[in-house]
Image (cartoon, rainbow, N blue to C red; front, side):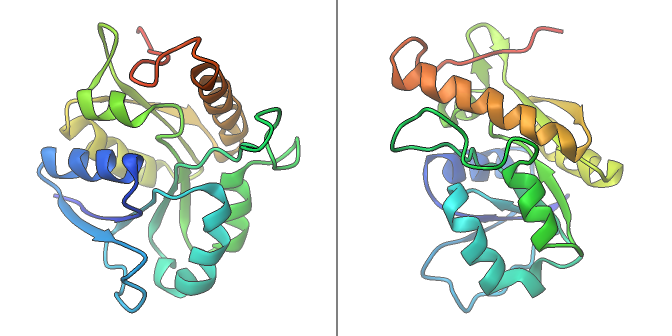
Length: 191
């Protein structure tokens, strides 16, 4: 049983929190009102927009040391939907890892929509969570949480692959915003 802290209570935060408990793991949800509450999970999932990451690090950076920290954000320019807002050779996850050198930063959940996490399906396929990171044990720990909830997990490689995962998430978001794919659908992985 893994102890997971989810920071954020939006659609994605709620869907991820549900997955954690479905798999029999221990859940701690931290809201904006919990500024004085310590983060106690072994895995800390930052279910917040990209713009909120720096504030969380400023407020809770010391509490995140030694923990597995999962970035789910897609650093999309939501005003224009025409680009990612991180440098072309970087990613939100890489920026987060630089701010948290004592944490094991992973990229995950950003290529799924909340609805596909909640239903466990993308069309007829089981929802797959792609996980990128540089620590094999951290990836395995998160994959265990994902698979315990009945979803699939794929090791997408090193944290350098976060850039491609963010571009993939960006594509999916822009297609849904343009009503070319459904917010309850998205891309599935057949293996």
